[in-house]
Length: 148
Image (cartoon, rainbow, N blue to C red):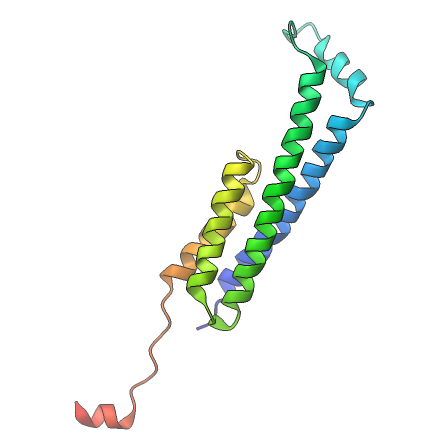
């Protein structure tokens, strides 16, 4: 049985996880950048936004922390996705691959609090497919046919 669907979903999930890591790096860079302070001050001085009691340092620290969380989740997603794709290749170990995909989906979804929704969804679908698709039985031999 070919496992093209699982492999394709796994590879796309790995690529999207890597893009999530890039987004996390961008958040970390923005959180530690001094260039962000004037931009945030300008947006907080907008009269349509109630910005009383908002501290810029808290916002910048949150961005940096969110970036770290995205990077950690993305690295876990890439590693577990690679293990899953390698395990499913050639229909060698579909249960291990399914387990890796589902663990990766849960970790990405929980750690990123929704930012990694798409790779998590793809890994979850691939994991369910690994468990749901059963290998087809070989055709009966001549001896088995004679015994019937």
